[in-house]
Length: 109
Image (cartoon, rainbow, N blue to C red; front, top):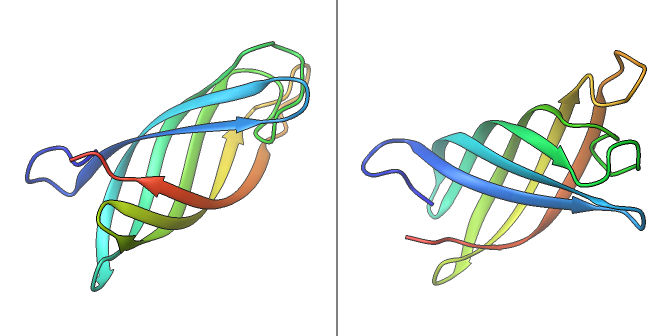
């Protein structure tokens, strides 16, 4: 959701595995790169529903940074791809998690 007349947006993601899911609210800086196409940088936080259970972005709550590209294909419908890094996203480890994603989204105005 675009935040007024600024280059910022609020975004949300849910990444899941067969064990649990991670809910990731984010803020993004959007940069137009072509007609109906944006590149974006994101920052947010991953909330893992069951700590210790694996998700595509780690097995514990963590700060998440990302970058991606989206393009509007129909009125308010987007296709996107992005990469996310969960910082310190594993229990008992300083390791980061990396997740590459793609899909279809809806733009709330």
